[in-house]
Amino acid sequence: MSVKMLGVPYDVHSSFLRGPAAAPQAVRDALTCGSANWCTESGLDLEPLRDESWFDLGDLVIPDHAPSAVGMIRNEVTAAIADGSRILSIGGDHLVTWPIVQAVSAVHDDITIVHFDAHPDLYDELDGDRYSHACPFARIMEEGRVARLLQFGIRTMTPHQRDQADRFGVEVHELRDWDYRIPELSGPVYISIDVDALDPAFAPGISHNEPGGMTTRQLLDSLYQIDASGVPVVGADVVEINPSRDVNDQTAMVGAKLIRELLGMMIGKELVQ
Ligand code: MN
Ligand code: MN
Image 1 (cartoon, rainbow, N blue to C red):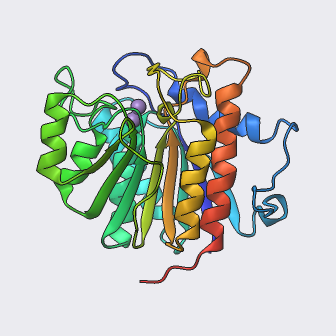
Image 2 (tube, rainbow, N blue to C red):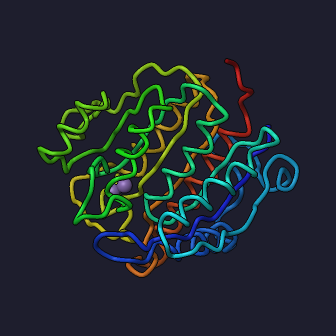
């Protein structure tokens, strides 16, 4: 099962700060800086599998105009997975998840999305903008192609977003209540990681500092629970790293670690439907 890594450098509709468009390059630099090896924690060495089991497609060149950007990302991902490959994206802000999921859900029926984030990103619109990075999961759920949306790490619920979660049947595990267990899943699964799910102490290079978050270890252990459950992960993204706010490339290194572990998870499993 091959995996295609794709940089999706788009942040035009970030509501507070721009910067995540620089993340694909920052994470690639962290992956290749020489300070870490290419093994996953389970011991799978990804380096010899490059251009065999996984491929780096480089970064898209994306127009600013949001409807054009969404269409282009969807078309590029559709082309990338047409041969049965899985897609692993580096954002960009969280808007990019919408067109990526459009492409993946056109191929795989009834996907379950596992979404890690401080924010539910369920706004119908933010400041009049339906393309805001605060809205992608409202857009995804409106389209009705997804079986389940599970959210973890959430600690910024608003009354409007609570209403939206009820409307769409989103399974929100707010961080104040969550026991760090992933409920039973059935495949295929798409994993979307907004790095601000982590506490800013672990990942300072983000646009929205939201204290009280997960540790890097808790996030990794959540991923390993998904892996151990045996469900096929048909797509994943790591979004919202803002290199202009990073400290000592700490957050870029977190991104690189997440990319390595996700690659290992996605290469390993055959699709059973
Ligand atoms: Mn988000
Ligand atoms: Mn967020």
